[in-house]
Length: 240
Image 1 (tube, one colour):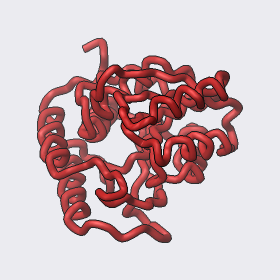
Image 2 (image 1 turned 120 degrees about the vertical axis):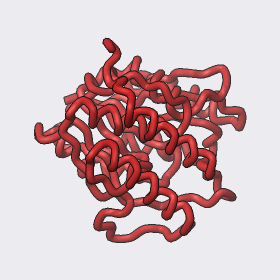
Image 3 (image 1 turned 135 degrees about the horizontal axis):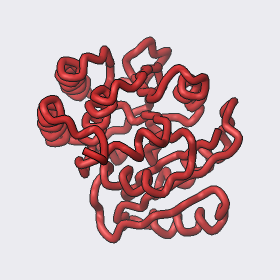
Image 4 (image 1 turned 45 degrees about the vertical axis):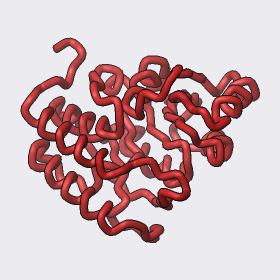
């Protein structure tokens, strides 16, 4: 199987080189080849120069897409999905909140043929985690419960970055949300499609706002709106 790693990047010059190197080093049983599809989403902190250098250094492994301005994580994933050529894809944030060492755990249910989609969870039987914001946790639990009410999936963490799919599924899902709320949208749509969904525990080392965290309370409000919208509207196939 071929793995496509989709990395949306916006102003991550402190982390992106180490993240890409870690992804390149990571081996997964059952994966014969790997590509990294990076979307520079309008960075203005020097990340663009770093990404161009990495693409030149690893031309066989890295596909670089550039947005002229910042469009949002959902738009970046939509651009990446159009270019990916793998059998399986995984979304990787451009920082070290999530560690590529978890790839084997996340991808195994798809490689084994048991799942169509796998979602990581920061709250399911974690061995260790960095302790951060209480109200972020409360907000996430509320959004996860709201999502589960509409999808009838028993997920514990809809906002965790690690989400893996058979590529044909993600390519056929119309992503309408430009920002972080695309995560709730895609969960709603795989549920509509009756996909086989697994959830696995992943390690998480969250950042503070001082360290570059970008997700704010307004993202939660938008996510709630997306959950309600696609709870009532079936928009799970491009052909619809």
